[in-house]
Amino acid sequence: MAELDFIQSLRALATHPAARGLMDDAAVLETGGTKLVLTQDTLVEGVHFLPDDPPESIAWKLLAVNMSDLAAKGAKPVGALMGYTLRGDQTWDQAFVRGLAEAAEHFGVPLLGGDTVRGRERHLSLTLIGEATGRVPGRDGAQQGDVVYVSGTIGDAGAGLKSRLGEIEASEALEAAYLRPNPNLELGARLADQVTAMMDVSDGLLIDANRLGIASEVGVQIDLGAIPLSAAYRAASGDTLETRLSAATAGDDYVLLFATNLPLPPLPQNVQVTRIGQIIRGQGVSLVFEGTPHALPKTLGWLHDSPR
Amino acid sequence: MAELDFIQSLRALATHPAARGLMDDAAVLETGGTKLVLTQDTLVEGVHFLPDDPPESIAWKLLAVNMSDLAAKGAKPVGALMGYTLRGDQTWDQAFVRGLAEAAEHFGVPLLGGDTVRGRERHLSLTLIGEATGRVPGRDGAQQGDVVYVSGTIGDAGAGLKSRLGEIEASEALEAAYLRPNPNLELGARLADQVTAMMDVSDGLLIDANRLGIASEVGVQIDLGAIPLSAAYRAASGDTLETRLSAATAGDDYVLLFATNLPLPPLPQNVQVTRIGQIIRGQGVSLVFEGTPHALPKTLGWLHDSPR
Image 1 (cartoon, rainbow over the protein chains, first blue to last red):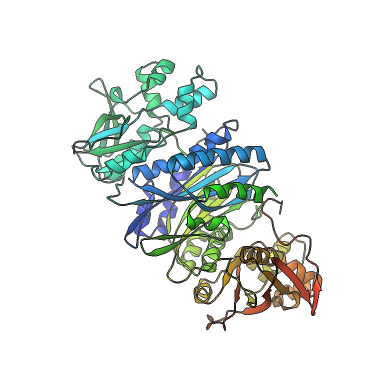
Image 2 (cartoon, chains in turn orange, cyan):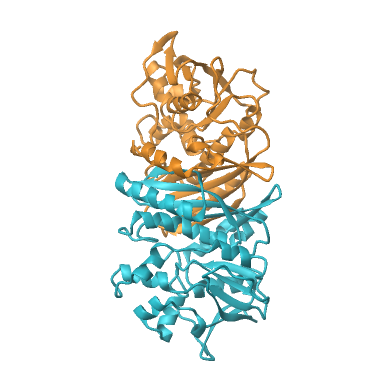
C-alpha cells in the first residue's frame, strides 16, 4: 500500500494542529477568530475521469469533489485556487472554463488564483478555502450507541461509470451522478453541530465507514439491506446482496456519512437521509444483512494507488 | 499564447477582491482581521525539472518557488497543502519526503494536508498559505521616478540548468542555484512597507519587469550593465552583452524585484540588493546599455506554454 506508507511518512511534517494528523477530509486552521477549512483534491485523466468525459462536467466534478469535503466540515466556501494543465487544445480548455463558471456560480465559489502548467497528462487540481462558523466535526468522535446515517443514495456514480464504459445498459440518471456530483453544503452545515463524527463518502461507503471507525476507535456496523439505492440503480442493476455490495464499494458518491445520538435537525428540502447502521464496540466497519453478520468483501472501496 | 487566453477567460470567475484580478503572484484574502496570502504552484517532470534531478531537491524547489511568492508579499508561512503523484517508485518517494522535510524545517512550514493521486507523469503541486501583518505590496503600484532594485544575482539558475544538461562546463554553484532556490522571506517582510510595487522574479527578469510595468501602467527601464551577475556566472559564461541578456531572460531566479522612492530599510545580513533601473513614463520594460537604449530581445523570459 504505497499510498498509506507515503502518507505515513508525511505525518512527521504535519506538526500543526490544523493538519489533524492528515487523518481527515480537510485541514482546519483557526486564524484571527475564524476557522478556515482547507482542502486540495486533484483529478487525473484516465484515473479520475475518462478521456472522453465532457470537459464541462470534469470542471464541475473538480469543484464538486472539493465542495464535498467542505460539506463534511459544515463549512461554506470562500474561494478556490486551481492548478491546470494546458495541453494545447483550446476547444477543450474553453469547454472546461464554461463548466467551471457554471459550477462556480452553482456552488458560490470565486476563483482566487492558481497556476497553469504544460504537461502531457492532464492533472486538474483545486484547493478550496472554506470558513466554518460553528463546530467543525471530524471523523474521530463517534461513540458506541450512536446511530449511523448516510445522505442521498449510494452506488449511482459507480454504476454511471459502468454505463459510460458500456458495461451496463446506458442510463442518463446514473451517468449524471458520475459526471456531476452534487454535494449538499446546506445539509452539512445543519448537521455539523449535532453529529459526533462526519465525513464525505468519496472512495466507497464501506472503505470510508471503515476510516471513520478507525479514527473514532469504534466499530461501524452497517446493515446492507438499509443502504439507500436509487430507482435508477435498481432498474439498471437489480437489488440483490451482490449489487448492494457493489454499490457500497463503488465510490464517487459525494454524500455525507455521519454518526449521532441526537434526533436529526430539520433537513433541507428534497434531502434524503437514511439510517444505515450503528456504532458498536470494535474498530472499523462490519456488516449485517437480514439480521445476520456478513463477511466484508475483499475490497472495501477504491484505493488511489490501484488502477481504476 | 494559449496560456494568456486561458487566464483571460478565467478572469470572469475571479470576482472576489482577494483574487486581485489574477494579476498578481498570490491571492490576498482578508478574513477575521488577518490577511491571508494564498499561492499555488506546480512543478511538472520534464517541464519544470529534469527526470534525473534529485528528488530531495525537487521537493525543496516545490516549497521554495511557493515561498518566493510569499516573500514578494512580505508574508510569513502558515502551512502548505501538497498534491502528489504516486508512480510506484517508493525509493523516489522516500527521497522526496526527506527533501520536503528538510525544506519544511528550513522555511518553517508545516504540512496541513493535500492529496495523492496515481499518474504516469509527475505533477507536484503545492498550495501555500501565508499571513501578512503589514502592508501587502502588489505589482501595480510603481510610480514614475521610483528606483528599481533586484535582490541577489540573476541568471545563476538558468546557467545551472545548462550545466546539468551539459551545455556549459559543470558548475556546482550554478547547479545549486537551479536545484535549491532560496527565497528570502525576511527581506520581503522588511521591504513590504517601503516599496510601491514588488514581485518575485520567476520566469525571467525582463518578462517579470514587463509584467510589473504593465500592472503599474508605467515603463520599467533596466540598465543591462547594472544587472547583478555572480562570480560563478561570470566564470562560466563570461560577462558580455549577450550573456547579460541571457541571464535576464533565463528564469528560476526567485529573487525580489521592487520599486521604491524611499531609502532602503536596513537589510538582513548577507543580502545583496542592486539598483538596476528606474520607473519612467510608458508601459512595460525597456533597456539601456552603457547609456544608450537597447532593443528588447525577442523572448523576455520563460512562457509556461512553450516547451522548456
